Length: 427
Image (cartoon, rainbow, N blue to C red; front, side, top):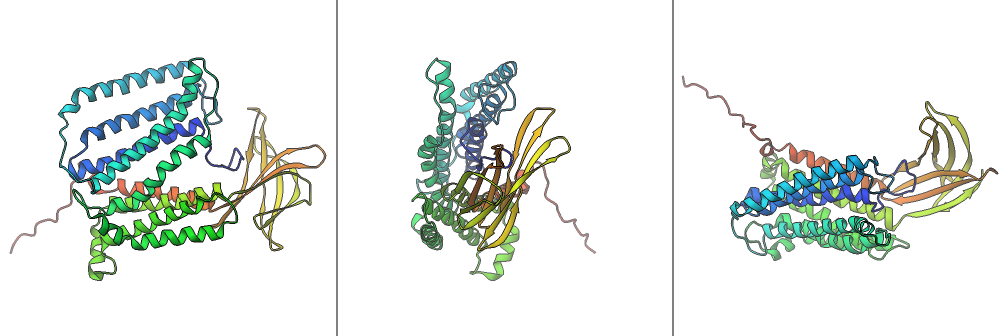
């Protein structure tokens, strides 16, 4: 996002997909482990997910390190290293699957549950995440398989993933607000939806506000904002239900202190994802872009901002030579910020990099890239405005915080004894 200078953070590159695969299967594993912990059910499926998640991690290592893929994200091109990783993959994953096949019948199932229950919601969560993982895996490996058998060279890009992966995420987001409020074994879906009425109102209001705010863009973008608001508000409602907020004022503080940290971690992770989704929609559906040759004094109007190019100058860095542009951003005739994009050349490695100039606020991100000079005083300049770009990074940070809070839960620290108050001898 900062160094490549193409204005985006994700392009469905095969190496990017290799990092997404274990995230999807690992997320399914985490949710499935909750059923094992609470209800002693789905044990065999949980073990299989653990094996598959490790397999996806090894597969990603193989794709990145072996040289079978050509990408700006690959780190090496060493066939010998690739063969070693492939052998490790076969031994580790093949051995684990063989052990699983031999021992799986001994993993007895736990308690029964009804179709409307938290167990069923977590099972549906697993189904959607694993299907999404398989979809991304197919799109990533299909060109390699086709090339290996001597077929035509094809490229699987964003259109495929937008048509297959995104529709799987829509029901998952809708389910994420409902699932945590369902009871174990058997739940009252109508009652849960009734308690989520405020979340439904928030989702509809956010969708209408996004629809009125956007001047142009995909029609489904407001729906995505509405789903994000539904998830965020539903997460707050679920946490308020746990703490009995606004119902038992005296009880709320005691419940807040006794609530497991894993519950707070879940709320942070779900809320962070909702915030990140708004950032994803803003930086893709509502992004504005301008690429042109600019000379000193030229002005570009974009999304209500005026970008004035004041030229570029050469400078010397500690181990590189660079060229730095100067772009003044104006709004309503007043200067907002000065962007200083750079191009750097490292003589020792004989490589060039781009340092994008980024100014981010809570509502919009201003992004500028300095391109090549035409030799007559003009420079190729790329300018982007990306609404809610900061929400993307903030959402990811909150998700990471949720994971750390969950890991700090005492129940997850094996062998950590609970403190006992020392006995006071009687007089």
